[in-house]
Length: 231
Ligand SMILES: CCCCCCCCCCCCCCCC(=O)SCCNC(=O)CCNC(=O)[C@H](O)C(C)(C)COP(=O)(O)OP(=O)(O)OC[C@H]1O[C@@H](n2cnc3c(N)ncnc32)[C@H](O)[C@@H]1OP(=O)(O)O
Picture (spheres, rainbow, N blue to C red):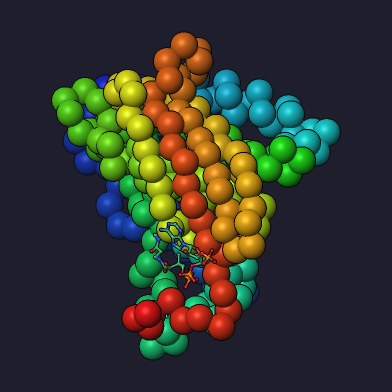
């Protein structure tokens, strides 16, 4: 059953503990992680419809749904860890969670991203939960910026490898109502050496309202440079 945003606000106490934290299967000691980019009961009809529509588009291989986890898989991001992280910090990695996945279901960012390699494009379908409020009834600008950064960042990393945001320039045009669903459409515009230029816009589901636009610069990381040293 779908739970409305109002219902979520009324919920007196969601389950405690660390929802979505990796669970160990004792038989194999293998860490099992929940893929957060799949429908859960907090998803609205709008988000579910967009999800179903794009899952159909994945059937011919033109679009790919991107799985999403609260924690990075060490194996997947081995290159990032061995090349850029301070080993003395890595031992605490199980406490680190992806910011956008650190809310209980339905309260923060509920989203799924789809990637089109031929178009170098990432679409993010985002439901903004009640704990993302800025001005009363509307989404906080920092929350919008977070998801624009994440969507353009995913686009940059998919197209060009491991990169970090150097610049993100946003124009906020119309506020986003809390608990609504929006579409973030991002596209790789240009590559110049290690520089990846990505733009995006945020629109309402009916495409009638342009909420925000942004252009971003990502720099592909240089394995010879530490991220910690002052330069
Ligand atoms: C995150 C990785 C996960 C990987 C897994 C993938 C998972 C997929 C999901 C990801 C989704 C998450 C997305 C969130 C992404 C963040 O939140 S990242 C966090 C916020 N960003 C940061 O903290 C970055 C801080 N900045 C830095 O560390 C460094 O400035 C950088 C960006 C690494 C660049 O440093 P650098 O490699 O030493 O590059 P540098 O030589 O200074 O500059 C290279 C060129 O870029 C130009 N440039 C540099 N900065 C600028 C600027 N601000 N404006 C204009 N030009 C600039 C330089 O002028 C230079 O130009 P040329 O002289 O070559 O023409």
